[in-house]
Length: 178
Image (cartoon, rainbow, N blue to C red; front, side, top):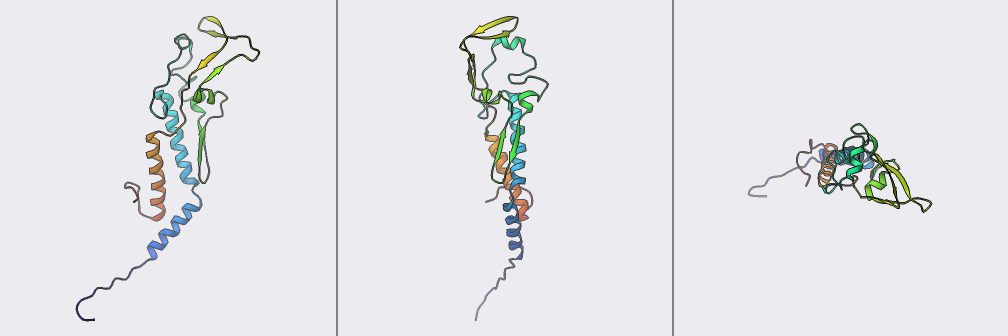
């Protein structure tokens, strides 16, 4: 060959090694889903402090009479900080999913709202402040706390990208994988 030429030889050993590490991570992604679960529990508990839903909407306020006699600060906080429903938030991670929630019997009532009626068709009887109340029903507004916020989406992406970046050996996840 006359003239000029340049020959490049590629050493694929590092690339191959990176793919092997990536395959190992993808074989068991539970460390990544556990990290996501930890982040989601924290953000869910923080929503109790901020009294907002995952989309940032403020929760419905408490009935003023109920609020006056309530123990503990905040709308859904019954006891010391991070106690009660707030402290019961946990996660369960599997290879391809993360479940976040609470085992408290009233968790769904507060997440979705409910109308409470007496079993026998009579009236509910309960104390509200210093008085006894008899009511045909009580409406508890939805105060969503479990869900994925826009900040949660960023956290999830950062956790996944960081896990994959570490697996292939590209260092930190400070930049997005493209």
